[in-house]
Image 1 (cartoon, rainbow, N blue to C red):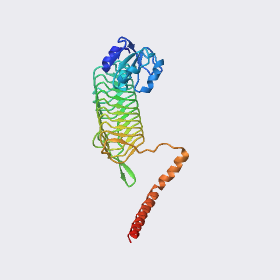
Image 2 (image 1 turned 60 degrees about the horizontal axis):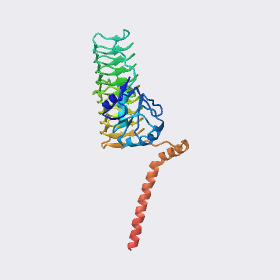
Image 3 (image 1 turned 120 degrees about the vertical axis):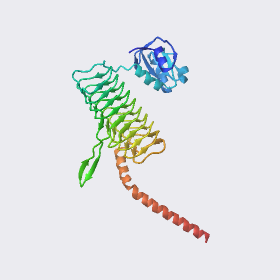
Image 4 (image 1 turned 180 degrees about the horizontal axis):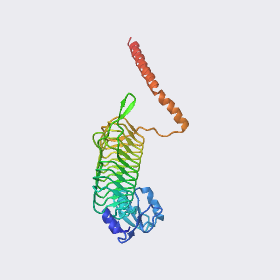
Length: 353
């Protein structure tokens, strides 16, 4: 993949200072860049590295134009947000292989399935009855798509993904290897110690421009659907339980779990290993830091945290003992506070006499 700096500048709507016809083939960090690669600077502290930098081009902020060392001989692309520009250039130069549109003879495809134009279907893919796959979509080896599923245009489903019956997936979605979409929600009733399974008759509806990480599981709804709205990005090893609704453009990092019937708003960011219990409402614009435990609804945008930071094991053991003593300490403190108020009241009364 090659792009001239003029092409890249046009895509980024960037100011170009240097050689327009310089060919760029890769995005590389400052210390490994060469004359056919591009790098970026998003913090002034990295400017000092440019004395030895051999990048063919740099993406920088306008404020850095006058600070570029004379030793640096490459071209400059000037934009307001270099990190965002870096992401866009990375897409332009992405070397990930894209298979040609073919359907493997080793795939098992129902005669009732509808397959669009320019579709790739790999070895040992299984596609059930009444499945619909739209144009320009890639289904890689070993994936199973059960009956009555719909997958939109320009999607990429990596190897060994399992998509249960009736799941709907929009356009421009990416689903990474070994994800499971539409498995049963965890619904049971207890009959005198015996668990009685509740059939999960809802489905999963995934919007457009959604990315789902490897080994992530999204349960189907018990009665209503589980919904992943447009623009959501989910990391690896996430669990989304039945009837959950994730709002537009929300990002969730790895190992987070969202319990059943919780609604997460739009434009939220949820860090790794967050635990959210069921039947809660989390409003738009909430940021949850790593390991936060959410046991109540959140109605105000902002950042929320609950995990304690690491300590030496010896200090943690002491803290753990004190955690168990907190309730007793609070009760004693409350009693002492009451006694102090009573003593002050008596002291005031004595002075008045």
